[in-house]
Length: 415
Ligand SMILES: C[S@@+](CC[C@H](N)C(=O)[O-])C[C@H]1O[C@@H](n2cnc3c(N)ncnc32)[C@H](O)[C@@H]1O
Image 1 (cartoon, rainbow, N blue to C red):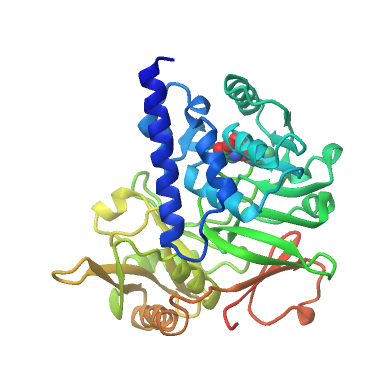
Image 2: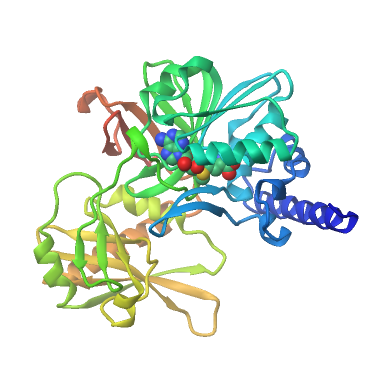
């Protein structure tokens, strides 16, 4: 590598870390730990993304897809900003034993820095191509002593257990019992988990009670889906089917609404409601989304392809999933929209309702948005606990209960 390009990559890396540190400071409650900052300044990220211009390799918010199939990303080297947050949350110390589920090489190299020569790093991936790629990149970066293996992370990696930390870097739907079994008693688990369709990175520790976890932190994130034994696809019936103009509803498991009635609703009885609640361009809305997901019985995410918006079938929304409410009794639904406040860089939240009870359901959605604004905006967010699926409903604390194969997740906003 020439002297100039070494200087380029060093500068790009410093700028990347400065941007991450600034973001953490701006977000207030979580200044990035010094150890994570130093690791980010040390590990040459571009070595894990050969051929990519350094501006892209060191873009602090950019994940780089390294494998996809039929337009679906299967593997990526995660964005530095979420990697930094997860390592910060993991609170790694020299000498610890760490399992990383989902490889790429870069994060494993950072973990190696953080646990030092007396620590132990195991990184597993379900895909042999990913492990081969990670091995090559780690060798190119002269990072030694990362134990790489092809394995399904749903089963953990028993032969190297116990672990002080398990860091899952792939989107999980549920908590695997193997992670519980292989984590040291005072261990910490960092896992991106879908909660009612929304992916949040949960930093979990056990309490004294058997199989009971509480979230120390809840961070917004996006990850490729877990494959293998832990793979799960939430039902997503289509309300409009033509390719390129599809409209779907991503639902939590459970009783299905009458999809034929909602298909009819998509084409009839439009109503609008406005909340008076506004948001700035730079403001995050992940807290609102999680509140709506917790508070609304009929919660769903409305998805759309561009053609549906171009055809005027629905208003512009987040194509991959916009908060929506299904009024099962009324065969109607509503979804969240935004309108610009004239002359300002602010937008007001509203709702479009469709179906025979369009007005009612749109109003319900804007009422919930107002409730979030009045009671929870800027607050600590929900208290999240996980219990084994065998826990009787009567023994669960109050809150929204989301039941999965292995666990009940309980979200409680009244804390
Ligand atoms: C976002 S990438 C990991 C990024 C990586 N940690 C890095 O250093 O940037 C997610 C990886 O998880 C892997 N994966 C998916 N399902 C898995 C499973 N059940 N067990 C282990 N790995 C899995 C994918 O093959 C993919 O390579």
